[in-house]
Image 1 (cartoon, helix red, strand yellow):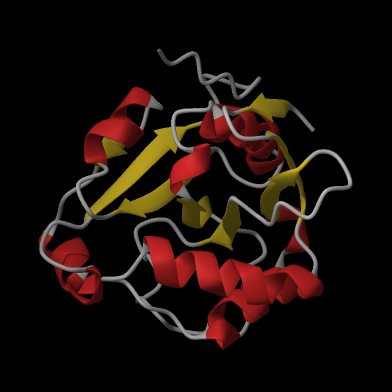
Image 2 (tube, rainbow, N blue to C red):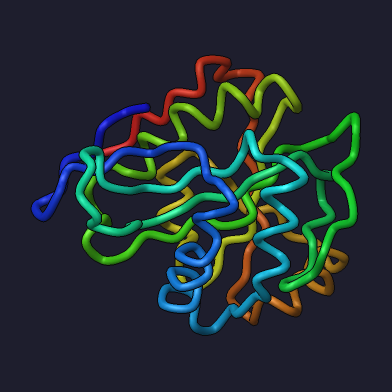
Length: 186
Protein backbone atom coordinates (compact mmCIF):
# COMPACT_ATOMS: atom_id res chain seq x y z
CA UNK A 1 0.00 0.00 0.00
CA UNK A 2 1.03 3.64 -0.27
CA UNK A 3 4.24 4.53 1.54
CA UNK A 4 4.09 7.43 3.99
CA UNK A 5 7.35 9.23 4.78
CA UNK A 6 7.68 10.81 8.22
CA UNK A 7 10.63 12.51 9.82
CA UNK A 8 11.29 9.48 12.02
CA UNK A 9 10.67 6.48 9.75
CA UNK A 10 9.12 5.29 6.55
CA UNK A 11 5.67 3.97 7.36
CA UNK A 12 3.14 2.05 5.33
CA UNK A 13 -0.38 0.75 5.81
CA UNK A 14 -0.85 -3.02 5.86
CA UNK A 15 -3.77 -5.28 6.75
CA UNK A 16 -4.30 -5.66 10.49
CA UNK A 17 -3.86 -9.09 12.07
CA UNK A 18 -4.86 -10.45 15.45
CA UNK A 19 -1.22 -10.12 16.54
CA UNK A 20 -1.55 -6.32 16.09
CA UNK A 21 -4.44 -5.98 18.54
CA UNK A 22 -2.25 -5.42 21.61
CA UNK A 23 -0.55 -2.48 19.89
CA UNK A 24 -3.88 -1.21 18.50
CA UNK A 25 -5.35 -1.15 21.99
CA UNK A 26 -2.29 0.70 23.31
CA UNK A 27 -2.59 3.31 20.54
CA UNK A 28 -6.31 3.70 21.21
CA UNK A 29 -5.64 4.22 24.92
CA UNK A 30 -3.01 6.86 24.14
CA UNK A 31 -4.90 8.73 21.40
CA UNK A 32 -8.53 8.38 22.47
CA UNK A 33 -8.23 8.94 26.21
CA UNK A 34 -11.76 10.37 26.43
CA UNK A 35 -13.28 7.57 24.31
CA UNK A 36 -12.15 4.28 25.85
CA UNK A 37 -13.17 0.99 24.30
CA UNK A 38 -12.61 -2.57 25.46
CA UNK A 39 -10.15 -4.79 23.62
CA UNK A 40 -13.08 -7.01 22.65
CA UNK A 41 -14.52 -4.20 20.49
CA UNK A 42 -11.41 -4.02 18.30
CA UNK A 43 -11.08 -7.80 18.14
CA UNK A 44 -14.71 -8.16 17.05
CA UNK A 45 -14.41 -5.50 14.32
CA UNK A 46 -11.32 -7.25 12.96
CA UNK A 47 -13.09 -10.62 13.01
CA UNK A 48 -16.26 -9.26 11.38
CA UNK A 49 -14.61 -7.28 8.56
CA UNK A 50 -10.83 -7.71 8.29
CA UNK A 51 -10.89 -6.01 4.86
CA UNK A 52 -11.52 -2.70 6.63
CA UNK A 53 -8.79 -2.93 9.26
CA UNK A 54 -5.25 -1.63 8.66
CA UNK A 55 -2.25 -0.69 10.77
CA UNK A 56 0.46 1.86 10.05
CA UNK A 57 3.95 0.57 10.72
CA UNK A 58 7.56 0.53 9.62
CA UNK A 59 8.06 -0.38 5.97
CA UNK A 60 11.35 -2.12 6.67
CA UNK A 61 12.04 -4.97 9.05
CA UNK A 62 12.92 -2.70 11.97
CA UNK A 63 10.87 -2.95 15.14
CA UNK A 64 9.77 0.69 15.21
CA UNK A 65 6.29 -0.29 16.41
CA UNK A 66 2.94 0.71 15.04
CA UNK A 67 2.11 4.38 14.55
CA UNK A 68 -1.61 4.10 13.86
CA UNK A 69 -4.62 2.10 12.78
CA UNK A 70 -7.98 2.34 11.07
CA UNK A 71 -10.99 0.11 11.70
CA UNK A 72 -14.03 0.18 9.42
CA UNK A 73 -16.92 -2.04 8.38
CA UNK A 74 -20.29 -2.18 6.63
CA UNK A 75 -23.14 -0.73 8.70
CA UNK A 76 -26.56 0.96 8.73
CA UNK A 77 -26.82 4.61 7.67
CA UNK A 78 -27.92 6.96 10.45
CA UNK A 79 -27.38 4.36 13.17
CA UNK A 80 -23.84 4.74 14.47
CA UNK A 81 -22.92 2.05 16.99
CA UNK A 82 -22.68 3.23 20.58
CA UNK A 83 -19.18 3.75 21.89
CA UNK A 84 -17.65 0.59 23.35
CA UNK A 85 -20.41 -1.66 22.01
CA UNK A 86 -20.14 -5.03 20.32
CA UNK A 87 -21.96 -5.41 16.98
CA UNK A 88 -22.63 -9.14 16.83
CA UNK A 89 -22.68 -9.02 13.02
CA UNK A 90 -22.44 -6.59 10.12
CA UNK A 91 -25.51 -6.10 7.93
CA UNK A 92 -25.69 -7.45 4.43
CA UNK A 93 -26.59 -5.52 2.45
CA UNK A 94 -25.25 -2.48 4.26
CA UNK A 95 -26.56 1.05 3.76
CA UNK A 96 -23.25 2.73 4.69
CA UNK A 97 -19.61 1.92 5.11
CA UNK A 98 -18.66 3.02 8.62
CA UNK A 99 -15.25 4.24 9.75
CA UNK A 100 -15.29 3.10 13.35
CA UNK A 101 -11.95 4.59 14.33
CA UNK A 102 -8.71 6.00 13.05
CA UNK A 103 -5.88 6.82 15.40
CA UNK A 104 -2.40 8.12 14.64
CA UNK A 105 0.41 8.62 17.11
CA UNK A 106 2.06 12.06 16.98
CA UNK A 107 4.96 10.83 14.83
CA UNK A 108 2.53 9.92 12.03
CA UNK A 109 0.31 13.00 12.12
CA UNK A 110 0.69 15.41 9.23
CA UNK A 111 2.41 12.72 7.16
CA UNK A 112 -0.40 12.09 4.69
CA UNK A 113 -1.23 8.79 6.39
CA UNK A 114 -4.98 9.46 6.38
CA UNK A 115 -4.96 10.35 2.68
CA UNK A 116 -3.03 7.15 1.95
CA UNK A 117 -5.37 4.82 3.80
CA UNK A 118 -8.51 6.52 2.47
CA UNK A 119 -7.18 6.07 -1.08
CA UNK A 120 -7.38 2.32 -0.48
CA UNK A 121 -10.37 2.19 1.85
CA UNK A 122 -12.85 4.34 -0.10
CA UNK A 123 -12.81 2.22 -3.31
CA UNK A 124 -13.39 -0.84 -1.09
CA UNK A 125 -16.24 1.00 0.64
CA UNK A 126 -17.79 1.83 -2.74
CA UNK A 127 -18.16 -1.90 -3.45
CA UNK A 128 -20.37 -2.15 -0.34
CA UNK A 129 -22.37 1.09 -0.13
CA UNK A 130 -22.81 4.41 -1.91
CA UNK A 131 -21.62 6.41 1.11
CA UNK A 132 -19.23 6.31 4.03
CA UNK A 133 -20.00 7.53 7.55
CA UNK A 134 -18.25 8.17 10.85
CA UNK A 135 -18.59 9.91 14.19
CA UNK A 136 -16.18 12.85 14.51
CA UNK A 137 -15.05 13.48 18.09
CA UNK A 138 -12.53 15.62 19.91
CA UNK A 139 -12.79 18.62 17.60
CA UNK A 140 -12.09 16.66 14.38
CA UNK A 141 -15.08 17.94 12.38
CA UNK A 142 -12.92 20.43 10.38
CA UNK A 143 -10.43 17.64 9.59
CA UNK A 144 -13.18 15.40 8.21
CA UNK A 145 -14.75 18.29 6.27
CA UNK A 146 -11.44 18.61 4.40
CA UNK A 147 -11.94 14.95 3.45
CA UNK A 148 -15.38 15.76 1.93
CA UNK A 149 -17.53 14.63 4.89
CA UNK A 150 -20.59 16.65 5.94
CA UNK A 151 -22.38 16.65 9.29
CA UNK A 152 -25.86 15.13 9.51
CA UNK A 153 -27.82 16.37 12.48
CA UNK A 154 -31.11 15.17 13.92
CA UNK A 155 -32.59 14.64 17.36
CA UNK A 156 -32.41 10.86 16.87
CA UNK A 157 -28.71 11.10 16.03
CA UNK A 158 -28.09 13.36 19.03
CA UNK A 159 -29.44 10.63 21.32
CA UNK A 160 -27.39 7.92 19.57
CA UNK A 161 -24.21 9.99 19.90
CA UNK A 162 -24.59 10.62 23.63
CA UNK A 163 -21.95 8.02 24.50
CA UNK A 164 -19.41 9.90 22.35
CA UNK A 165 -19.67 13.24 24.18
CA UNK A 166 -21.28 16.59 23.50
CA UNK A 167 -19.06 17.58 20.57
CA UNK A 168 -19.69 14.37 18.58
CA UNK A 169 -20.92 14.81 15.02
CA UNK A 170 -22.24 12.11 12.69
CA UNK A 171 -20.74 12.74 9.27
CA UNK A 172 -21.24 11.19 5.85
CA UNK A 173 -19.60 11.33 2.47
CA UNK A 174 -21.21 10.15 -0.76
CA UNK A 175 -19.17 7.71 -2.80
CA UNK A 176 -21.27 7.48 -5.97
CA UNK A 177 -20.12 10.91 -7.19
CA UNK A 178 -16.52 10.04 -6.38
CA UNK A 179 -16.09 6.41 -7.52
CA UNK A 180 -12.30 6.52 -7.47
CA UNK A 181 -12.35 7.52 -3.80
CA UNK A 182 -9.94 10.39 -4.38
CA UNK A 183 -9.44 12.55 -1.33
CA UNK A 184 -7.76 15.55 -2.98
CA UNK A 185 -7.23 17.52 0.22
CA UNK A 186 -4.62 20.10 1.00
